[in-house]
Amino acid sequence: MQKTPFARGFATRSIHQGYDPLAYHGALNPPVFLTSTYAFDKAEIGSQRFAGAADGYIYSRVGNPTVSILETRLADLEGGEAALATSSGMGALTTVLWTLLRAGDEVIADRTLYGCTFSLLRHHIQRFGLTVRFVDLADPANLAREINSRTRLVVTETPSNPNMRLVDIAAAAEIARGAGALLLVDNTYCTPYLQRPLERGADIVIHSATKYLGGHGDLLAGAVIASKDFIDQFRLVGVKELTGACISAFDAFLILRGLKTLALRMDRHCANALQLARELERHACVARVYYPGLDSHPQKALADRQMSQHGGMIALELKGGLDAGRKFMDAVTLATRAVSLGDAETLVQHPASMTHATYAPEERAAHGFTDGLIRVSVGLEDYDDIRDDFVAALDSVR
Ligand code: 3LM
Image (cartoon, rainbow, N blue to C red; front, top):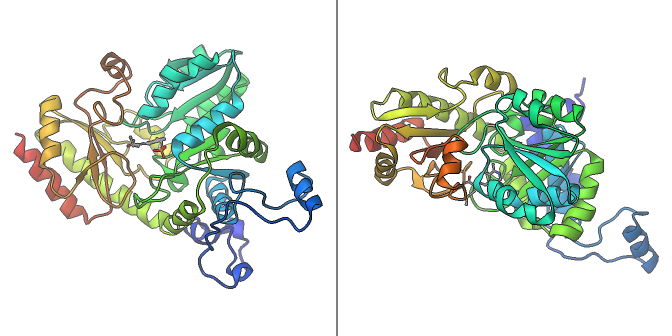
């Protein structure tokens, strides 16, 4: 019996979902609709579209056929009703926040988050009359204790950037729901191939599609996946009138191309990262490796429960601290010294002075990551070459 599209596997859906070549002159790949505006047959049709009484495109800030194919595919892969593609991961986050929050609302955010997400919540959002409290969400009991009737939104990443702490999505979702709050999970590190927060009760998933979803380090983009009701608001109020954070059709095309190999790439990222984490843990210069697939990770059992594999990101501390870390970073020859993640190339960076320089030194300490922490986005190169590069660089700082 022919399987219905929904019953098809993840890799199949990442290649086909939402696109029928026969509807586009047989073109194997989705056309890139490079247009800002759309012609209306008659004035009345335009009025109806603006009033929401007729379907059809109006203007590419609000919708574009290439972008729609991407949105259909992302919603399907995350197991959500609908999706909105945005100009960047930060564009996805701000679109959600500006749409949902009102002065007087409170946000509870996890203690470790990507540096710009942290900075937005720590330094900027207060001027709009919002309160943000940073709570250690690695223990759901802390959320249960801190949440209250003013809490509108709970913001998490799991695993967190940069120190790989996990949040129990199902537990956090239940607590948030009980208090009338919404749970937002930034699923950038995992992609829906490894973890699907909506299936565990989260309300909103966001992505930096700049990372694994695009997968080739050649674009900036983001996405939000949620119920159709929320996505309509994020599109028709959020992107349309509050942030303008719309994606370009060309970047949507590149993500659609990247998605075709998402499953293959994630399998390889995960396999390389697990082997590398084990190898690093054995090295005499390494004080600690943070990777949820290691037995030494304090939340390994949770990782096994909510992730299908343990991802392509590793963090490590060297025994010689920051100095040794800097020497190590300068000594690698295959890996690239660069921020961002999820690319084919292995990338190494120093969170305290780069991606997470937005945290004050005392905040980094309080939020659980040291100045010596090095972050690795394990790439798709041959594992032996990555290992040789890292071992030689570590040996050189002894
Ligand atoms: C980085 N991260 O190197 P964009 N959510 C997560 C992220 O890691 C990021 C965003 C959202 C990095 C970018 S740092 C200058 C480079 C978990 C980005 C934001 O707006 O698409 O960059 O996504 O960790």
